Amino acid sequence: MSDPYLLLWLEAPLQSWGHDSRFGRRDSLDFPTKSGILGLLCCARGAGGEQRDWLARWADLDLQVVGYVPQDRRGQPLPRQPLLRDFQMVGSGYDDQDPWQTLLIPKTSEGKKAVGGGTKMTYRYYLQDMAYAVALQAPAELVEETIQALTSPVWDIYLGRKNCVPTEFIYQGCYPSAEEALSVGQGLATEKRRAFALRVLQGEHPGEVLTLNDVPLQFGPYKKYRDRQVTVQKRED
Image (tube, rainbow, N blue to C red; front, side, top):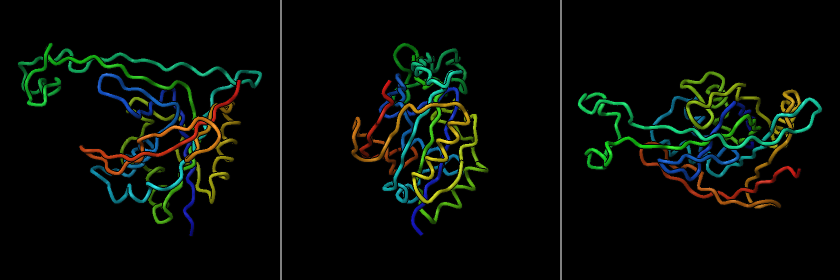
């Protein structure tokens, strides 16, 4: 049996798919990353730790994404919403004399107080009102386990960050090819009055070619990734 494709529908008021973010600035790509998708599956499975063997079975398989924006009443696509920037203070408002509260205040690598008291300013960026049909090629021997996890998740699943709660069932079926999966995704987009915005193909094709370091080899405290080339094809306005 060849490796089939799972159709995942990712829709929420906010999504965030970090790629090269640093602590103080958490950016988002225009589309879901492979590491983000596989991390979502790990949450659904209730699987923590490094997951090296499990990740290795997904590393070379295909991933295709189609992004959709809302339409207006005439059926015309609405302009993309700009990235939403959320300003947060990490470690603010805690009593550094309280042994429990002090655990929540950022410290130096030696465990000492940071300069300025430990409070850190962070900026976090979110995609607004987007939906994505994701055709994820799955190892044939893991398909049933993955479907079970997505339909009855062990841990909460979210779209990039914990405040990005999905507003639609994520699992939308299993299909022999990416074309069939994305055709069903197009039907779902039509029902929801959404219009094509972009397509992301694995490998080099006509369009904007990017190299992403988003193929996870190891999760856990010490994460490891490898590169993947993708092509982004956007709607011409």
